[in-house]
Amino acid sequence: MSWYLFDYGMVISEAPTATDWAALEEAIGLPAEPEDSTYWRHRESYDAGELNAEQYWTSVLGRPVSEGQLAQLHALDVRAWSHLNTETLDVLEAIDSTGAGLALLSNMPLELAEELGASGVWPRFFSQLFFSGRLGLIKPDRQIFQYVLNELGVSAEQVTFIDDRQENLDAAAALGFHTVLHTQGTDLAAELKLA
Image (cartoon, rainbow, N blue to C red):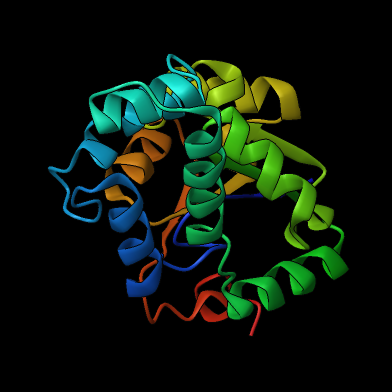
């Protein structure tokens, strides 16, 4: 059986909008979008499950957060990553109709995974959901890819991995995965030979 392994951010979801970033920046009083911002500086530890939501936002702000502020920041973060790529959803539906296996592997904090997974339409396509925050491993660590293979009970050659980051694809390819880089404008159906 062949499997398709999808990333979430920038593949199933689209990028946060300018409005999303503005709302986050207003709430934290600091820039959020730039790669050197505290939002991103502490994100890997949050994704890996080393920080919970309160610890993460405390690190971002540089000071303790109140319960109300934490709820607001979490809600804004969830909203920012909730915009779905409808073309990808169509591809998931097409793959699902073929009988191939569908799984998800995302660098995502546990709190975000629980919220997005409960409210989204996309989880119904997947028989397996793998989140870094739950596993304590993040892409591109080869251990997370090996964990997925063990859970799926297949060899890497049976899996096509779709991700927006080349370093993640390189790590998967080194283990024998087929890989597809998803960037803005990618015709995913054509790349996967579904069209």
